[in-house]
Image (cartoon, rainbow, N blue to C red; front, side):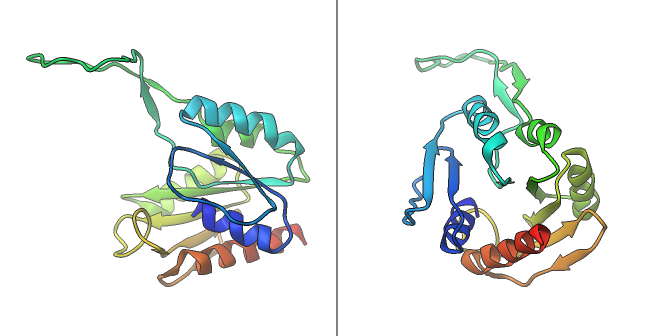
Length: 184
């Protein structure tokens, strides 16, 4: 969704800084500046560096919540058992939510597997989002690995707008329209 949103907003005249993890997707619009990162910490650092100069941010990346404490640069040979210790990754959304100024917007995404609306609403408030885009693993043909998505947009005032399954380009248009309404 992030790439579709970047293209849609650039098409509408916005200058976009797209911070992307390791993906095979490409961008084509000249208004998009792409910054490639390979870790959650690199993504956090890039977001914190660029956010103060931005009108807002859309956080659509599925950043892992945890990372291994110990990283190996060589293959781990077979063992009878192996314990991997994990530590939390930085919470990029929460950090940007703390830094958000009154003239900025912040949009988040939630991919939930249970209590979808309740969990998304909690995330909206905790992270200081203006609205959150909820998608579900339960929706066939939506989300990761598809060119289609089915979302619900939940606003701070509790208003929920449900959309049918459609192309990610069309979903990006719906989200961009919502952002334009925020800016009025």
